[in-house]
Image (cartoon, rainbow, N blue to C red; front, side, top):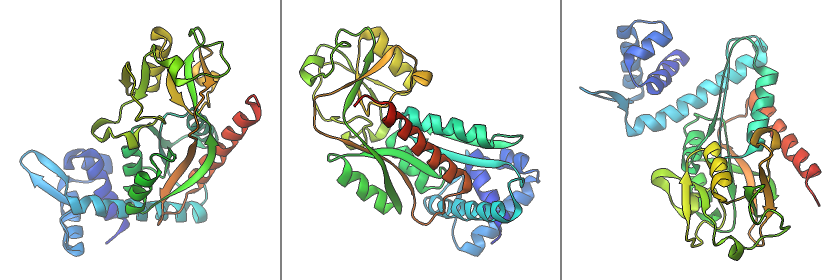
Length: 307
């Protein structure tokens, strides 16, 4: 087994076709096919299922791919340490729930390391996909929250995927609303006062369980519900429909504009926001920079927030 074979396998999985993978790797299709066949034979597994409709990962191939990404990541860390920072295109990926401080840290990363060649990704996505991205080594870091309601279920899932949660900070429940919302002038808002207004939340796809919700109090009954996929749509609906969403209270006016404000919610159920990594992985130089920037962004918010 070679690093090259592992790279070939990851590339085929990412592209979904031998043709596109061969073009990306600058090798012939027969050479790529033979390399993967040899790897499967050596490892005694079938990594890909091949049908008339194409090629896709088998169940054992999904597991193998997670380890392959881990090995390639460790090799990249080793090269970065001993070859210096000029060795090839820099790569980094983080998967996160919809937090402005996660975007701020990503901006810092790109500004610091985004020189001539780089391939960086930030995936604001569903909770289950965050866990799966880190488990399969597609993302080095995942950002999500735990609380008294979801902790038992999510920690069991994290453990089964060999993932570890590290707390960044504890946030009290707030709501995001428009600056022109009828409740905008209040210093504290109750759930009863929110009853007439539409509740906005991020939908979780096929894993649309209360435990995977990005918002606390997800199991509470509400008369008016709207689910969205992206942050821009949610903020537009907050303004256009006098809607609200339950959140951490951390908001960045430079990223989200001045039309959205954060107001404390009169409820006792804190969010423990943190990040997850693979237990067997080692955080890269870029990953450590991102985490340091993430912590600075949070600290800056905490220092500037009203006491």
